[in-house]
Image (cartoon, rainbow over all chains, first blue to last red):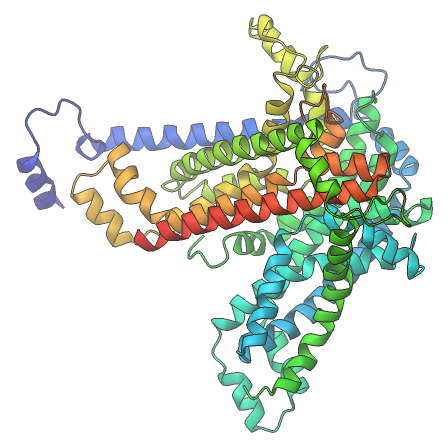
Amino acid sequence: MSTVASAKEARKPKSTPRLENRQRPIWLRRVRHRLSGVLLIAFTLFMLLPILMIVNLSLRPATDRATGALDPPSHLAWSNYVDVFHQMNYLSSAGNTLLITAASATLVVLTGSSSAWAIARHTRGWTTWAYRLFLSGLTIPVFVLLTPLFVLMRDLNLLDNLLSVILANSALNLPLAVVFYSSFLRSVPTELEDAAAVDGCGLFGTYWHIVLPLLAPATATVTIFISLATWNDLILPLVFLSSPEKTTVILSVYDFLGIGGRFQTAQLFPAVVLASLPLFILFLVLQRHIVAGITAGMGKG
Amino acid sequence: MRFTNRSAILFMLPAAALFGLFVVYPTMRGLAMSLTDAQGVVGGNFVGPANYVRLLHDVDFANALRNTLLFAAVIVIVQNALGIAIASWMRNQNGVRKLVRSTLLLPTMMAFVVVGYVWSFVYSPLGGPINSLLTFVHLGSLQQVWLGDTKTALLAIAATSIWMYLGYTTTIYLAGYLSIPSDVSEAATIDGATGWARFRYIDWPLLAPALTVSITLSSIGSLRIFELPFVMSGGGPAGATDTLSYLVYRISFNAFNFGYGTAIATGLLIVTAVLAAVVTTLLRRREVSA
């Protein structure tokens, strides 16, 4: 190290007034590094402020005089949550949303992986075109097909039925899964599948016992992304569902709060927390997979 | 793998059926519908390209197109610049890196509508958090009616969107930074490359793959911005935050003018496809040369 440093010293142009960080004493470098870290955390907290505000205000009793957003409440008004829980019919809407999410994820994982397997392993002209078709599906704005989709669901007698949301949602999320699974499979050698074939395992058996387990990490990521999109979706439930017992969490938040009106903090913020908490928990538990999905195919993260 | 054409078709059938019936078919019908004057959900006579001609002369469409492109430009540029800056800040901080990344990703887990409501509150003109903060630091004269002023509404909503997805963008660029081979970094350090020169000649070219991914995703995503203007400003004030998606919603589902609404949606589709193609081609070319 010292030889490199002294060689560098020898090459350093005499006219440079400012020292580079490497040439400063070590203790100063450490201080700068620490300071940089502290500032980074400060910035992160700054970005977190709205969420802290949400939690804080959700526990503020309605009787508290309206003060600063981050002033702590006089007492923790858990009753806010109880009230909103009932007004939003949370149990029912969460149950519906969970059903829609689980069904969509299952459907997409099964159809997407089987399709991607065929595309990745059977490279012909037509499979490439099928892949491109799925790929283009990623750029279609939902509004282009929303009206005809509504008509279709009506003709299939599926309006106000959770199934309409499940089917439409699955179809819209398929491209992501197919693309993801295909790229994953292309980087996996075929040895296990070939071995299964040699052992006399049929195509479907190979799929079920070899390929699906092999795809587990990709499935984890795909499931998470679909769950995220499905849980947070407003448009499909808004268009297809109408009965109160068929509502989803986000839809009920929208019904509850309306458009740009005046609402009490004691109503708004518990609703926000109730709507976001399941996904926050999912995120905290599965962070690794979420980051892996975001940085897919880009090397280290 | 011994797939035959027949078995491959069999395996692709479920996905093809699902996708074909619920995405491809409605899209085709939508395009067909845009060539009619359908009001309400049934009927409508074939009018050929009349809707598209109307589109080209429509002031509302031009306004929505302008706003949508403006949203996309602001969001893509600011979000990516900030993402790169924060990622470069994070890359050497091994200790707090994962915590920071996870915290920044939290807003991404929230629904658009929910974020919209929260930030409508944050932007409240009388005693809302932002205006109160400005007063508190004696900058009270800078207070605005953020969502009610045509000059600030679009930027305010863009800022909300950036808050939501900054963590996502930062994660992508952090991965990009961390995938710069260590021998390249070391060679650069030994050769005395620091600061801006280092960024320009070492980091920036090697971040090309991350740039492609992030810019493509953020541009496609921001072009279809709907829920935020829907919940925060209703496309106002005076159409200042009216976007193409919101216009489609208004025309199709409020005015029930399905034929014209779908034509606008097709316009949005074309804009998205063209932009995606341009962006991808430009960025891919950079990737190869870098």
